[in-house]
Each structure stands twice: as C-alpha cells, then as structure tokens.
Image (cartoon, rainbow, N blue to C red):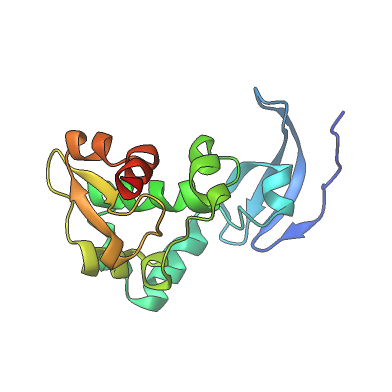
Length: 168
C-alpha cells in the first residue's frame, strides 16, 4: 500500500494513473500519463516537489521556445556541461554528498552561471585533463574566481592550505 495516494491528481503535465510500487530507496512510485500521451514512472515526492513536471517533453518545449535547444543540444554530454551540472548540484542540491562542503558553507553561483550559456561564455570549453577550480576556495563560483586547473593545482588549492598561506 502506498505511503501517499496521488492517484487522479495532476502535477503540471502529469496525471497520476496508479501506484507503481517502490524503488530501492523505498520511495513510493506512481505511473503517470503526460499531456503529450507518454507514460512514465515517477517518485511521489518528485511530483509533489515539482522536480518532475512531465515525461521530458516540457524541457524540449522550453528549449524550442527559447531557441537554446540547438545551442545546448550538442553539448549536453560534453565534459563542460557535466562540470556545470556538478557545480550546480554541489551548491544547490541538499541531497548531493558534496553539498556540505559547498552550498552548506555558503558557496554560491553567480546569476550569469545559472544558465549554461553564461557559464560557457565566461569559461569556454573545458580543456582535457582540467577541472573547474575556485581560485579562492572560500569564494563563490564566478568569472573572476574560477579557472580550469589540473589535479596538482586543485590539490594545492584547498581551504586549509589557502588559510595557512594567508596567515603566514
């Protein structure tokens, strides 16, 4: 028996058809039909929090409306796009393991970088063998505080080492 009964309710483009069991995390799952006609299985908590609003067609439609689909489409599986997604998760997603070291410590992302195009414009494509690094590890993710760095640079640029260098 489901922990919550959402059958018959509509959440954005999704209408809940019936209970679909539980996943490995014991989340209640529901079978839903989207306005476009596709069916999908969604965790009840994701419906209620509006984290999932369609079968995926909403994202496509929004991309078409903004004209960004063609710009972003070729980069969705790129290292640069994955870096941008991970940066956002570390700062914004409280369920992300690394959140405690970023978002919980007050690290934010500048408004321009909340959109991938803004991030790409400022940082360019991620070079091979490099990752996103904050120059001041206590600072935020923004153009003047970020660079592409290799592993050695990343390891030498920790909060502890930065604090020691400033205090010397």
